[in-house]
Length: 91
Image (cartoon, rainbow, N blue to C red; front, side, top):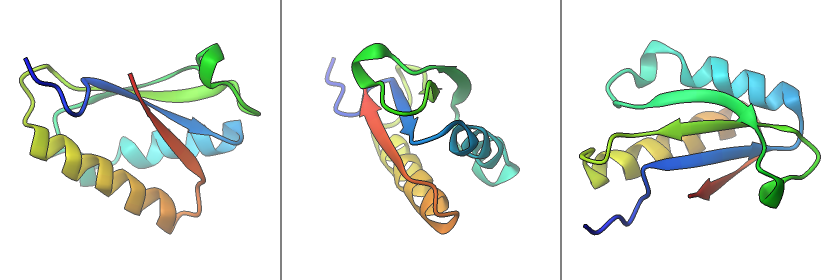
């Protein structure tokens, strides 16, 4: 099975405040059309920076790739509007 956008991604931040703000933003009804789950998790050691919290996003394996790409772009846009610096790590 081809999986160009993986079934889960980590959002990595510079500080915990950004992680909590992102959790609130992504939990809003604006993104309810995308079928995903989100969870605040410890930042994996290999991605660790100044912040020890990350947001883990998961999709089901049968989610449409176009839908995932559109959702990732929506995340970039929303977080940029709120001036939240982040990295997206595909795992």
